Image (cartoon, rainbow, N blue to C red; front, side, top):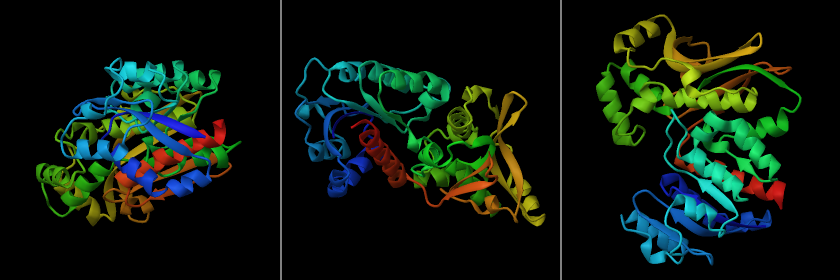
Length: 342
């Protein structure tokens, strides 16, 4: 099956994905996946569309040199994201735009438009899943289209595909997780006496934190991922704003050292559980015993512990997540499109 792909967003994940797919082209072909990129839309580097396929290497060079994509553009009627989606030059949307955790936009509208236009959708963007999972799932199913999002939580760790295939018939009663690598890094640095502000600056210098770190340190990223897990794995209908959310701004080096003295470590914990007919979800710093593997999740590592009936405490740990693993998750989703819809 040939996937003709339109990209919205061409940042680190998208560019890493392109190089990964080039490197693994033989393996992809052996799994019946051939591909062309027919459109790329970016916020900073312009837009390019060509039904015959863009020169991917030229696009990579243009973006990474700080240039524009205009020289590759062959469809003057395509001027923005929506016209790219509706141009009929791609059968798959790869949605990798910047997310707004409070609204899920503009990625949510991109996904809606793509499904309405008859396109499969693969996204690493948490917003659409946190704000409109049921709607998008049902739109895709009604149109017999793929809608995959493996990289929205824990980078490329196969959470959703494992649940889809390996937990059939199991009921998820709740989960606990550490899902935000920026707060992990900051808390680890603060344990050694580094101030909150200096730990944030170190995270920014490493590229772990954005220039405005509030999405991470105030718990929005963790709350959005919690909503995604609830909506997909627990059949919930939760928004990030409905998650009881406390960030790490009030955690001090003194509190962290006190916890260590009591054989504990403070982590930003995401959790949800069924209570009667409702699902309660929370993100907050918690003291975790050093006897718990969660105490040793640091840096960009992540962990998810599922309490299922009949498999309690099923735990997935991802060590060293990042751009490469996120790109892998997107590639795995593209293979899922081929597997299920060719």
